[in-house]
Length: 499
Image (cartoon, rainbow, N blue to C red; front, side, top):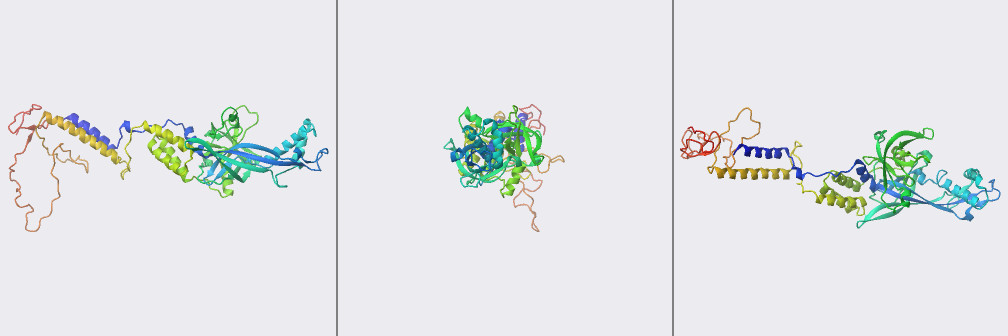
């Protein structure tokens, strides 16, 4: 075997020992941005909310409005609807939104109903428009706002809608929700609702210690203004920005984060997440008339307090765990593994819209990739090559070596011989001397102790020092080619033959 042959086989053997994979078999990661990864994580948990309100307003006899007492609006209730965003925090149907979205009190539905009542009195000519604020102040002080049952708060129906896909087509699922607990805008602005559902896709809250000034964030929600110019859809909007400052409200009682994400009506109650897809806060409010992106979010720590007070754990469900494993494979470029994981998600949650969409994209990308060997566990040292890879490269070494041997034999059709390799102090422990290709070396066996009175040699075996009747082949000391018994010069390299 020539020098070039040995170099090629050594190169392939090095690849075998290092466990490297040819470049053509490497996967190509998806060119996704951190924002796209975060959106893929949080998207399934985001829901669209509609709040339907109904309230009766009564002017008491003690009012200064002497020209009108009793129920306004001719005794009919005022009805209106608001839209917000929410997100699931527990797979058993627990959903978080902003407190002002579901607040029946002065900062919420009561205040809205009183404003409608004063406006009705202006339209009917009972009061002057210029006196609107005066009568509104009195209304907050002494007028009553009731639901269908007298003495109750305004009636509220909450509808939770989430985007799903049936047969590959986008559609929606609607649930009625009940209000579990809430904090008004002035007391933290967070609320907890419950729907009768299981295996809801959820999102995790970010630890407070991980939130710092400059943290990149995505604010997610359903801005109502977009529906004025586009078709309604269950795909939320994602606004990027960063945490600009940590401030407080109500004289330092409640913390808020100032962020640079631009938001509009309808996004209230949606999550603002970091680039790991963890909730940093709940979209809360922004200064009226501010032309620049300048908004505030309720910290995730207040949400955590609300959950703890009501015995609700913020956790992922089995579907979420598998879905995130699928995302890890997808964004690392392992599209075939991602396909298998997305199938697992859809087996449990067949209407999971994001899993359907990403599965379709993963299937397309997988077709553009060469098949890769199935990975096997590494050896005990942690650096072993996959079994399939080892077999493949070993086969390549044998084929290349065998092919080169054929060429060598065509040039020199004599059988090669073996030169004994002396053991030196530099030999690596556990290594074996290199043997000539094609030569079957005798199997070494440990010497066995002989029974007393026996020599240990089989009957008929040649004794030490006896000459063998088999003529030993000769070879060239320079290039290793086999020689004729009477050759004086090597026909390959021309060197003289001695001995």
